[in-house]
Length: 410
Image (cartoon, rainbow, N blue to C red; front, side, top):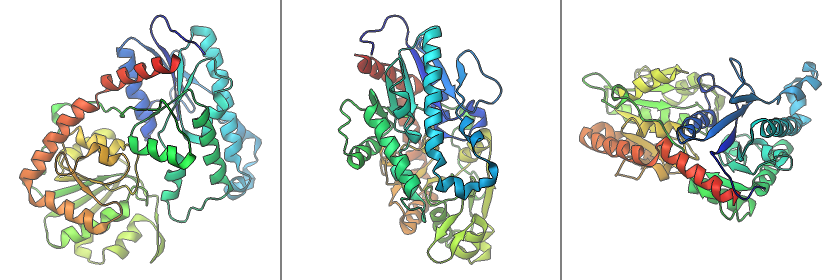
């Protein structure tokens, strides 16, 4: 491992897809922002990704991580592949492919450090072969993300992935985390000290004037939710809370943006979003004021937030949600769950409101406060924007990352 570095930083960052325009994924968005910001400070940043859409070369390198699937006949089916724990073989193949790409890249142009997501325990396979220090970024980890879904049990596949991620984290030269909450949870769950680990907030790009919050105006008041319909992101909570809010406010609408993953309920079993609305919101007049928009392009989402009355982030657990950062950087009045890194972004009654995680009643109460008090909504949104510009600028995050890499190299 190199002790000192000369010249500008040469960094490799692993991303689960590239470019950002083609992937609805927080890690890809983070990688794109960090690449641009670190290059603005003079660093050279190469992205290692698989898949890559639209060609690669230069500062975009594709590693052949999907080749393992070619060994398994399609007729085996998903259930059989799951029982065989093909994830283990895929993770091993991907990690080795990354290591090969890093060795080639280091030999061709030199490297100082490589940063890898904690996902799948990739760093466990990369670290022994890497010619430079491996830094792991705690975007997950799987031990709390997977169990957010009801019906998921810690089977062999789950335990294997968690074990691989633990080994990858333990063997890394350095650990960075978007939030203190996820860092402490990782230390406690795995029993690792992780001395020298550093909390570096995920950055967010500032918006133009036209994308900043302006409110609903004279039209219907709008509650906007951006996220999957599943238990993890709390889409079910949002719909039930909105139904309570709408009982006393006839001019309020809910705009639900995101894919339908379904929710396992104790009362009705597994339901998609439309079936859930039929069961959870029996009043058809209220149900008509819920609009499920599915996936939308980033520009459309920015427009929806700018014209909202309230933005809601209702995750039952979250690391450092991009959707919350996107709300506060727009200056939106926001209600977020008091969980994980969300409560490190939102300070209750200062730059937003916090509700109790998993509580329909608490979420409905806080949504109602902002809907009924435009002055409070405007005040909290203004402070949220000022905080976001100061705390989460890409340049600030880039400087903190490069200083961290320097400490790891020493």
